Length: 361
Image (cartoon, rainbow, N blue to C red):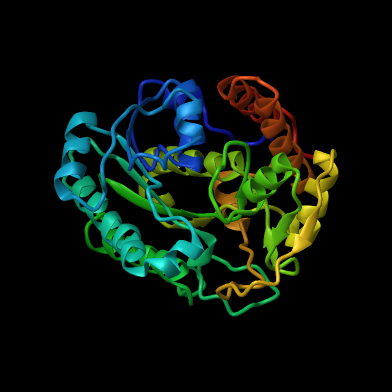
């Protein structure tokens, strides 16, 4: 019998953390959770797009530190101001379709921006651990029916996926070239994808598209209902990144590798099945239709094997896809009905933490 591993306040309390990308969807959840754990969080990111943003709704966790990771002076200023012990790098151009519209900016941010951060981190004497967050799309996707392990080749046919494959190669190169001293700092990467949860307002993402359409009273248009993906609540990979950072800080080179954080195999659903479930959970007049417009090609099947994280980090997914979808719909409906987003988000973090106190069979 073994308890689930979860980020611990006894470790994080007082830790100085530089979190890039803190204004984004995953970054906002991560920044708020770190603050609840007692960490001193210094964020660095571009200002979010105009309109509703989770970061604003949560009271701007991580602070108003706005800047571009592609600018060396901005990155140096962030390190000087924060003197971080732990760096969690989430800042990225994180969507497939915009990468077709501006591939140069995607590669510039996801590769050269990463290099700026890694260069400064290795020169900062306070840094003990660096976690680079990439994506499951970093793998060369050959449409295998099996899940990809950390030893698989990096690749990517679209600009976004290729940029994440490049980011992993850069991380491996820096780890072998510069992050190799016995006393650190130590460098690892975390890979996850198809993350869902409340507060994601991005365009061309499945759940936000559903919410916007349902609130308009329109059917959501679905590009490819047969595409199959692993689906996980945002707290799943964020917990993985934090457990990885904690392990890297404590055990050094033992954890300085690439790590997958994915759901169980039975949480790999088609887009059509996910949308049907969301329609059912939302109720009211929710519906969906297939979009017959021409779209850039995306992979039909992609999932990762998280056995290494389960065995060596003690990390486990806690929410079945049904629960992840339920929590997501509950978040959007609660906020729509007037509950403060901060209250709803903290409540879900507490619920997630409580699952760690249960015992695995």
